[in-house]
Length: 394
Image 1 (cartoon, rainbow, N blue to C red):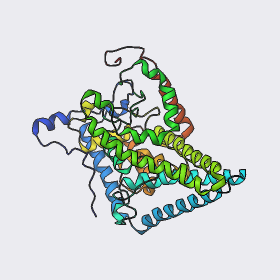
Image 2 (image 1 turned 135 degrees about the horizontal axis):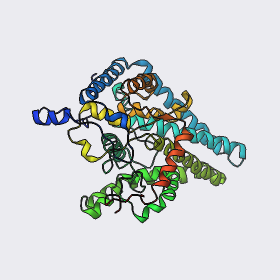
Image 3 (image 1 turned 90 degrees about the vertical axis):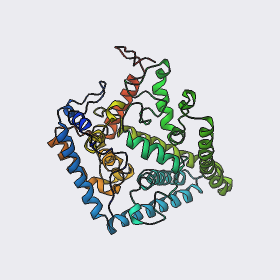
Image 4 (image 1 turned 180 degrees about the vertical axis):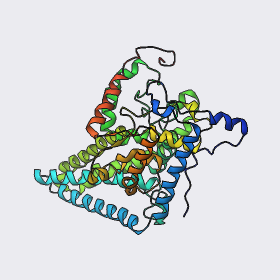
């Protein structure tokens, strides 16, 4: 089955005037995060890079098969067994060792379901299997975000406009200042506090992310549209809250409180972990942000280049990559968001070699190092810019 690049990749223009204009363009990031390596590429080099990345993509698509299908089914089976074992141990949670073991297993199960299974299934990575139980159109995950809303805010908005300030709403998640091109206001003095709270309640923040309530004040979105979204999100939130904080604790009878505490802790661990992995894939030193103007006439090669410059990988072993949902290969994921996640480790060396050949950065590092860089950026951007411009102060 042939799969083309997502519709977000604008075909190269055919109009002669526009083509000449595009041919002279370079990829220039915004001033706050320069990547001079990218500025030396000609338009022809960028498109050649795109063609070579297409070849990698086509090869993986052609080679998908039984081993890949067995992989995702094995991960799903393992996740479900871990969840059952974790919840069973929590029923004996009055005993500290059982509570700790149950909470640990349930935390791992929730991370796997969120990162390696839910995120990737909803990207359509396994749609080619034509298994209705493992398909982006039918999967609903163990998060308060409903799948439909998340696919719009993430698959479309984020992966279309990756790191484009003003378009990619994941730059700041509507509450943080993560770019010098975001106008500074006194509100952003709370950046570190907002980020800490977001990490604790990450799934709730992501669920409300797609509401775009700020557009109501500007008139871009009606209150009726927001209310329709709220009702859909509210149903999913109610279901998840009932499952983890009422039904399973109630089933434990006299051990209601240990089970409640275990479920809450597992959700907290999953939130903190997913927040750290995702922020380290998008905002450490070396990742590049772009302006909306750069989207005009963007070609396939330029789209690929933006993904490479706007993403960062994490170093680690096979188990670490599994627990990140293979988002430790964030560069490869942004290049090929609908390829099976288990294949990212296979193509990562090729992508890295291409970066070296074209003089492009391939940003990668340990989780601890990159998370520290993210925290420093969040703290720095809480303060007003040293050299004030009208664009930087709202």
